[in-house]
Length: 117
Image (tube, rainbow, N blue to C red; front, side, top):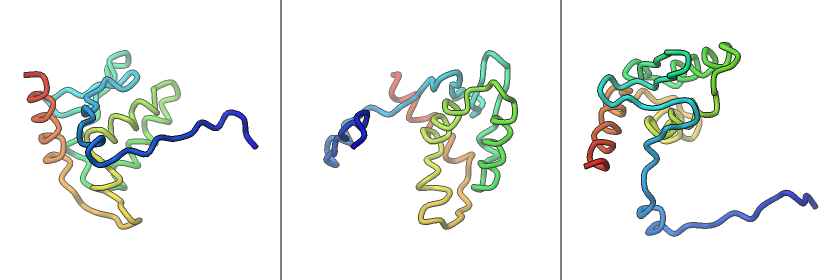
């Protein structure tokens, strides 16, 4: 038996619906709702989410960030997950989908603005 395994909590649908949405920042990454990009401030690096319309484009960005060497890849993945919901919108059940990154990012920006008001 592994000693460091922690039990996980099972949530009801009502509990999940009541949870606040994660608007970041995610590690060294944040979402800029005005231009619909994920921003890495330390490196002044932007990823235009409006251009991510396929799982291949998303994966390409993941490996581009990874190859930079010292960028926060986990934070980047968390940001992609929060804004674009890749499991649902890009590749659920192993099926490649073609969502509009632009529409997903705009919807997230609207929810972000509404949560702040």
